[in-house]
Image 1: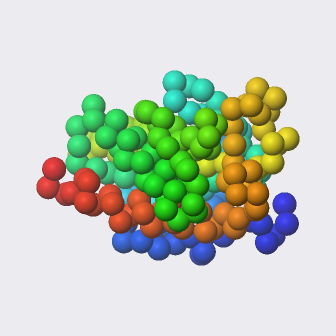
Image 2: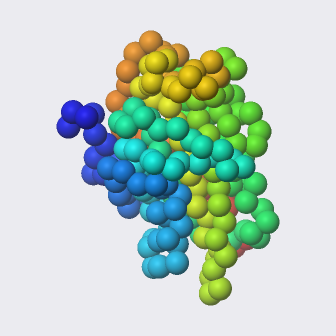
Image 3: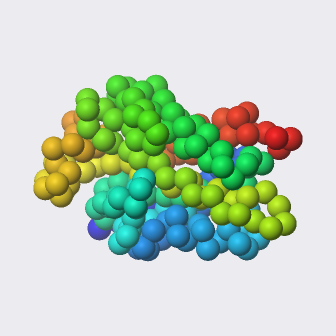
Amino acid sequence: MPMRDRLRAERLRGGLIIGRDVIVLEQTRSTNDVIGQMAAGDWPEGLCVFAEHQTAGRGQHGNEWETVRGKGLSFSILLRPRINIRDSARLTSWVAAIVAETLREEFQMPATVRPPNDVYINERKIAGVLVEMRAQPNGPHAAVVGVGVNVNHSPSEFSEELRGRATSIAIVRRERLDRHLIALALLRNLDRTYTELFPDDL
């Protein structure tokens, strides 16, 4: 992958909480697994881990989330919301709504949420969300928030199984976009709304 196409952590950092700390990995099994391991340590809330390629990315109900190296966004966020561990659906709904809103309002695409965790354009999936809660004995439970967005995929880069029901930003807009622009918009909007919806005093 050409150097100019790689995600760079220094171009993704920002935000008061979400995106303040960013790590970019060349390859991992799953960014959710990476964050899940970090959740037991003293890593700060809002930490984001991106991967250029996942070898075992997953979606809801154990489904596989396909990644193509350097084409999409695959990232996970460590959060510590003061909510009951059974309320993780609130996080899923919030993240899916922000992904769809960002695509609509900042990139002029008719994105809609297909509950509980998918984002569609023209009846084809463009993004998905996977939230996994991790119980913590001495503080707020950790939430591992995984997001996958198809950005610069061409139709041929989807598997034959997905080709008829998946799409990407590049396919919809008929142009490739800098993935940093998409990632920054998502992180900015998630950061802006997180403390409004999940205040510390819950």
